[in-house]
Length: 498
Image (cartoon, rainbow, N blue to C red):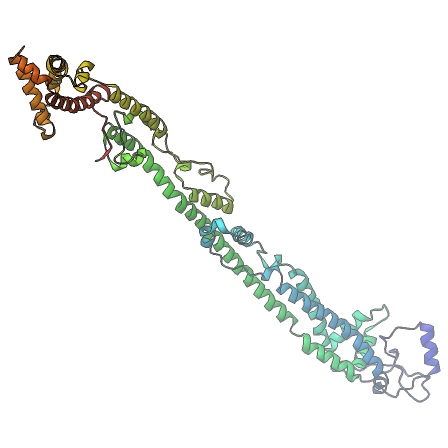
């Protein structure tokens, strides 16, 4: 029995030797005396003592007799070595697939900025991760599984290396069957027993062939992981740089046009207020003024003063006033994406500042009132003595008609003629009537008291002619009087485009 087998007590071993005495001249393989060649390369001849109970004539007989136990020893040692080598292999593979091997992709943040108001939660998460940069191990020894894999490979590769040599197998025997009384001779003889077993021998060869590359596999994996870590660090840093520059550019692209409009508004608004206010002093308005006041060409003005209804606003325009509704949404989305709470120049409550407004409601109210006043004045006005009118409406002739017509001429037409505009005298529409009245006036002045003249004044045809002239001119005069004295010449005033 090999020495590596579970040991009996010294008493049991002596009894076994006595029982199997060496009467046949066999070799005592107790290791206490005698000598023979082991057949193990590099191993000196072993000495054994001849005893009465040994049945082995030489060492080879011993080795052959213990082949089965050599297989068993080899299988036990090999099983332990394989288990540790497989464990080391798994740990190297796990290390190679761990956090040190994660892939950090290059990230372009521009798409996120362009669609900031439409980003999904996943897209926002991808942006934030890229902004944080690479968060994995920065060095190889920080990679998860590195220490365990390195230790396991070191242990397993040592076992595999030992499996390929006699000295190594002896070391494996010592590790597996370590006992205080297990000396070098026993160890060497047990290794010879294993080597004499075809199964054990092949098992060691298979282990050497299969696992001899453990160190190389670990070194290669470590190299790949190290390269990946360096690559991830570089890519993560570039992503952070791209996002840093991208955030600044996105903010600038959005805010700069707003800031420019703000500056232009603060420069131009006072000028606009001045132009519109001055332009509204008459009824000829520029397109800019009409647009600013909400008026249109052809609108009636009467004698209304447009400047009275203009409300200038000299408030300084800020970023929150200059931004459009769409820009406010983009600004809020960008602020949320980049996580910058200091981005508060533009809010959802901001409103545009109108530098000039027109109180159209009050203007319309005042216009309605003024228009009613003008119409009432037009309808209520009459010139001269009403008896003159009544004279024309009766069928009076003769002296009564003369008196009434004379009174009308003296009390009304004469005074009216003196106030008529010069252009009316040449107006074909009124010229005949005016000339008739002038003729009647002249006749009345030259023939004062003349019965024939009085009779003529009393004639209905003369009355009708004078009445027609009076009515026409009274209406024109009435309108003129209203314009001059009530509407200040502006009853037909309309907005004209200038």
